[in-house]
Image (cartoon, rainbow, N blue to C red):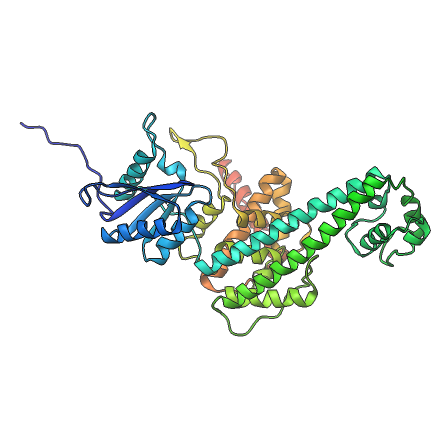
Length: 444
C-alpha cells in the first residue's frame, strides 16, 4: 500500500505581493519570479527612483508590499506607496530574521516576499496620516521640553560653581522668583539684599534666607555660561510656544467626532500653557476623540494629547483591549514551555503612549477614587514598578472602552472598591472553609 504524502504546503495568501529590503542609500525589491524575468530590482533612495519603484510595482499589478522598519529610511517610501494605493505592511525586523549564513540584501527582499506570500508577516500599527502629522509635532514638543530641562540643569551647575545656593531655598529656579533673580544677575546686579527683594509672596523661604544664599564668587566664566543658558532657555520657550501653535492648527484639521465641547471636569494646569490655552486644547481633544480622557483621574491634558497623537481616535485595528494592551507593552508576557510559565519578562517595547500611561499611573498614589484605591492596594502587595505597570494596564483598558464604545468615564468611588475587596475576601475565606468541611454564614 502506497504511503500517503503527509507533507503540507504553505497556503498562498498574497499572490500579488512584493518584499522590500530598506536601506539608507538603496532599496532592494523582490517579487514573484513568475511575474518578471528579473524578480529582484535595485532602486536608489532619490525621489524619482522611488517613483520608478512604485511604477514598476504597479506595472506588475502588485497590491501588497511588505518592508522592514529600518530607522527612518522607510518613511518616504511608505508614504509614497500608501498614497499610490498599495496595501503596505510595515513589519518588525524580528519577524524577518534570515537563516544563519544566508544574509544579503537580495536574499533579504526575497525572504520578505516569501514570508508575505504565505501570510506569515503582520503589519505594525500606524495611525492615519493626519494623526501621524500631529504625532510628529507632539514628539518635537517633547524634545524641546527635554532640552529645556537640560538647560535648567546647566544653569544650576553654573550657580553651584559660583556657590550660589538659590536652588536650596526655592523649589524651582525656573519660576517667577528664580528667573527674576537670574535675569538681574545677568544684568549686573550683585547685591544679595536687592536680589532677595525680588522674592514672590508665595515663596516660603524668608528674604533674609534668600539673601544668604546669594553670596557667591561671581567668576566670569560661570557668569558667561549662565548668560548663555538663560538665553537658550528663552529660545526653547519660544520653540515650545511654536509647537503648541502648530499642534493647535493640526488639531483643527482633524475631523470632529463631537459637535459640542464638554466642559472641563477638573482644574487643568501646565507649566508651559496658560489656563485659557489649556481649556482650548482640552476642548479640541474632546472634539477629535469624541470622549473626555481627562475625566479619568491622573490623566491630564498633556497625557491625553500624547495618547491622541500616538493612537488616534480609531482603535478598530485592535480586536480587543487585550490586543491593545499587548501593543502598548503593558500586558503580562506569555512565555510557556512544557506547560509551565517561564520566568523573565517579554521583549523590551518602547511605546510613548505606554510611557505616558505609566507616568499617569505613578500619580495615582494620592488619588481618592477607585483608581487610587486600586493602585495603593497593588503597592501593598507588589513591587512599585509592577504596581505602576498594572495600574497603567487598568488605565489602558478604560481608554480602549471609551474610544471604541464612545462612553464617558464614570467614577465608581472608593466605596465600590472596598465593596469588591470585601467580596473577594469573603469568597477566599469561603473556599478555605469548604476545604476544611465547614461553611461561612454572613452575620445578620
